[in-house]
Length: 227
Image 1 (cartoon, one colour):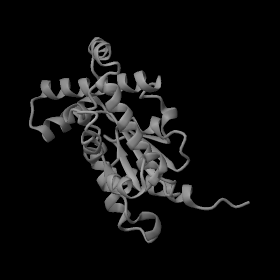
Image 2 (cartoon, one colour):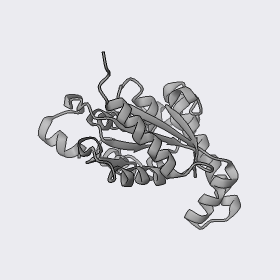
Image 3 (cartoon, rainbow, N blue to C red):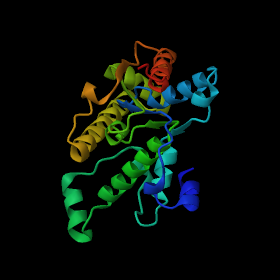
Image 4 (cartoon, one colour):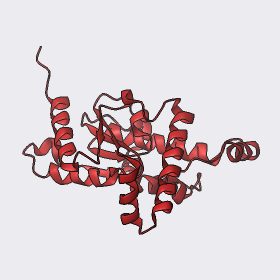
């Protein structure tokens, strides 16, 4: 969608705001961010206001593919998909020899695409520090998913068919990488509740309950205020 627009209109900076809302989902590893995004899309189909709820897309892997196909970046798909944050020493060495680290360019491009998607509206963006990137845009609904590590470990074991220790290690690595990335690029704490409109415990609240609340928030954001 982005590439088609660029072919027809030019640069990312040329994309006008549509006035449509967007959703960002930040999540602890294994808290169900991707599941929630598709539950929300499914629940949108039940809504009568087709102008508001029709034509939405989820961006996660697709977003990474847009970034990774940029020939100037030579981005690593795996590092983008896992939001891997390289060590400061590795970044220092990359920057020393190239002027700007590959990671810096990857994230810069990713953030540019995230903001573009949000400007176009009707997108659910999972991860990518989207709540930080789009804080200045008025039509966003920002969600954070958390859950006890034990519950997230069980979910990760089932999803990836790995043992308990592998799942626990993967969760801690991913959470750590995301926390460091948000701190390094935005000087914010990913767990700061002020970054989000709502934080949900996905162990005790079902995806459909969260989806119902998000839908009400979207309706409230798009209802003209009475003067």
